[in-house]
Length: 154
Length: 191
Image (cartoon, rainbow over all chains, first blue to last red; front, top):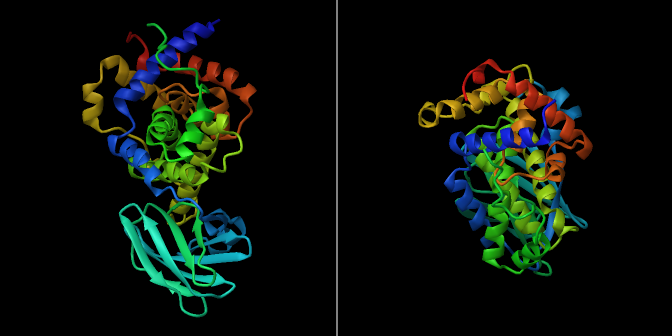
């Protein structure tokens, strides 16, 4: 019978092994600490309410095909549908706001931001950005309020 | 070998840190990162994400906490919140990667968490052997043990949130997995 103390000692030894062999990379620590600078106040949060990657029904329909990833973010009555275009390293989003309206769409990504205006039907196509965490910030023309989507890894 | 005692209890002052960080207090935020970055990283690596994917999942997890700072219902449980968020992001990344494999299955071996050979050369024989023994465990054990290896040591509550399993199951599973580990040939005769 092994005592709790022996398990704890073995785990402590394993913890040291983890620190030597697979530590949190410094750039990961740095990025984590720097992420507080993305803090915003007074922006409404649009939650991720659909991700085709987690949709088993769709997955079984398109298995094997290179179907584009589709995401939906929702904040109150506002829906933001986007399709992810491109491959690793160079991505862009094709999107649409419902209800249709004009807005400035800012893609926030690890290397900065890229900005685009929607057309009068609420449609937009962003510039390219690198893969990694992204979030959309929308300044709605009507009312001037700001909506931000949850961050997601693309 | 004695138990490391340098860390405060896992839940000390978390509510204060979260509330201060929500006000933009960088020192409080840094303290949260210092406390939980190891856990988030270990969860990503426990899911066998590559270093690049683990870095993305880690960053997304922290950015999600930034946007949720003022909305967290129970700030004292921020570790469990981070663990669950990291797990969900890992699953997304794994499933998205699976898309590009012809038969649609997720090929976990294709990503792998093999350390750089040079890293293992720097480690002592015992450390390298322990690492290899963990890697050789059956998947469920390897995953749990890798997450428990996070530094600072994670609470059972955080680990339960990381894998969506009952807290009560962690102790017995941990014991079973560590017993298996001790019998691995990789560490036989190396002390």
